[in-house]
Length: 159
Image 1: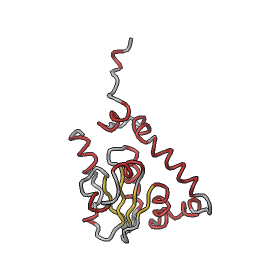
Image 2: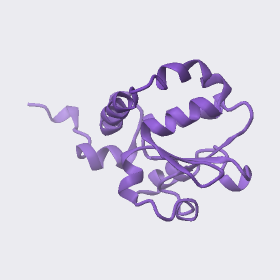
Image 3: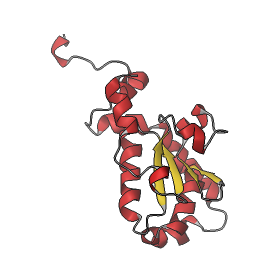
């Protein structure tokens, strides 16, 4: 992993668990443009400072979630609440609609009885394509995009 990717994944400027004791911890892919954009939105919606954030690439993540594998964390976002309960993917987002006042309007839709399998399916579709979406955003995704799509193609070599 390049120094640029390490910096992007670990120095996002978002509050870490040590800065917000007792907060719920959001674990996300700090190398993913889509994921970092999503947690920045959560940060701005978190008026009452109930959340802290860790990139899954941060060494401190093993202190917060020692039983989660790297592969599990790469598949979907995780939220570890202040009682050490774990929520992942669509269930994590549903949980956050109960925790963040500004997400309350989405709560009824996400909690329709029997709808969780649909939300899990939808979340997995987006999560599995996140690097593709990030690459299309035009933002520099550093080594993360190269891992998934290979090195950038030089447009001058066409022909």
